Amino acid sequence: MAVLLLIIGLVIYFIFNVIPITKFHYLFAYLGLALALVSGIGIMANENAHFGMSEKTTTKVQKIKPTANVGQLNLLVYKHVGSKGPKVYVYNGKSKHTQANTKTKNIVKKGYTTAKLVTKETRYQFKNKFYQLLFGFLGKENQLKKRVNTFEVPNTWKVLSNDQVTKLKKQMIVMQKKQMQAQMQKK
Image 1: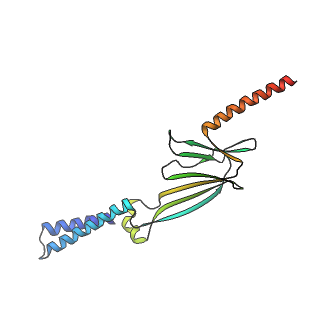
Image 2: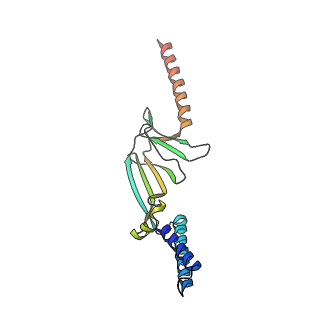
Image 3: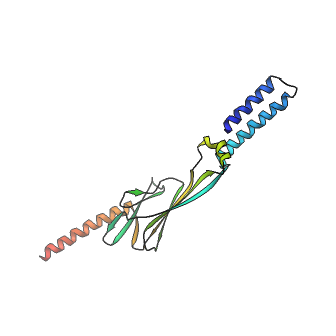
């Protein structure tokens, strides 16, 4: 709608500025120009500063399972995206993971009795139907502002990187081989 008002304002400006239809054609021309300017500024303000929008925060809590179990030890595994990018956490036995983008922050807190993931999302929504009518075509409705994933895990859980898990597996294989050799020597 704002683009339509912008176009209408420019057409009115052009018609009344070029073709002197009435005695007050400059007045109508400048009113058309003002309409076009206000519409253009509104579009830019909505695009850059989310004019006409408010922030809505939602919280979602879900129980999670560890990525892997090593004896009594539960593991929550993460991997860096790129060389020093954000961490992506894998949970529920490698079936789910967190999002990898600049608007997502992951936090791990220990000392809880059960493991759960608390996700807080803040999204932009239009303040009312008027702003939705004006700027709805821009596609800003429900745009993500930020997301915070908080893993609340018991003290028995360990948080390891993918590289640390690989090293741990190698150490476990070596230890199992040594135990097998020790048992064979006892017999």
